[in-house]
Amino acid sequence: MRILLVHCRYRQRGGEDSVFETEVSQLSEAGQDVSLCEFSNDDIAAGSAIEKLRTGIQTVWATESVKQLRERVRSERPDVVHFHNTFPVLSPRAYRVCREEGVPVVQTLHNFRTFCAGAMLMRDGKVCEACFGGHFYQGVRYACYRQSRLASAAVVAMQYVHHGMGTFTECVDAYIALTDFAKVKCVAGGLPESHIVVKPNSLTTDPGMGAGAGDYVLFVGRLSEEKGIRTLLEAWKVLTDIPLVMAGDGPLLDYVKARAQELGHRVTVLGRVSEAEVANLMGSARLLVMPSEWYEGFPMTAVEAYARGLPIIASRIGSLAEIVHDGVSGALFPAGDCAALAATVNELISDQERLGTFRRGARQQFVDHYSAANNVAALLSIYSAVVERRAVA
Image 1 (cartoon, rainbow, N blue to C red):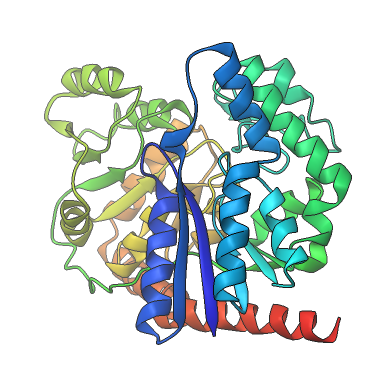
Image 2: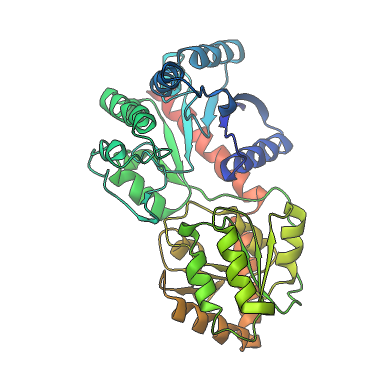
């Protein structure tokens, strides 16, 4: 199968870039005919009002980048075009171009950008669903994109234009949602339920089961409000005998360092670490804690933990309540409840037999759902289905 994978890379590398690279590698290693069409968001204009206006227009219609895509489609004639990120350099007009060229389109929904200007269904550190029902203007009202009403207006214009033209309903043959929870939210946001298939993220390389011989609980992720950092550190005020190791960077780094100093040896702050070091930390940790207070997409951290057989304690919110199987691969607690988090950590750490069962359950989750072989099979099934539907349409 000839597959054209399209992605606009972010200025700061993130999870979507990683998933794109993972699937390129997996499909290529599986013997598929894969070609790439990449754009960079480093090209986004900044500075004068005129430059920002030009970027805003590009977010909606993207004349030049779409022209490049059309040329690639015409020259390579792929069987399917699979998009990861089109924002803002490419715009949803890219779907329409592929339709005009007779090539089926698949889009992975890494976030909620088609109906949320901030893409995360979050505002002021809390869950927000104000734009459901087509009320996209709320994104401008609250300056949800880059805390700028002008920048947000460009995103909202993109939403109104392409929802109004039917781009999202008529020009995409299949959407890939990462969880059932995300699918429900995307349907509520205006995407057609019949076009959405659920497929999780995965890993290309299996690092193998870890020994879990360390004496610590691990946090890996961005140090920011939505990740439940304050709740996490409040819980550790009462967990006096359980070390916490925190790996990551973000706007709350100084706050985290100050609280860690107050808590003494109980909390170790590593800052940003390499992927290899994360794998090593996960291999030795007793538990991974994910106290998020927003609708996570599908954090690769969870997949990486399961690959190492590392059980997860997570907030019972959004997709996390689906990814972490309570009593099988970890445990759930009410989001924002530091007392419940502390009690859950203490209970598991003190029950070695149960923790061992969870370790085996976590590893089995990876084997059953998140391996490269499973992901390639799912992708090829999705591609084949859209090609067949387009052939008989």
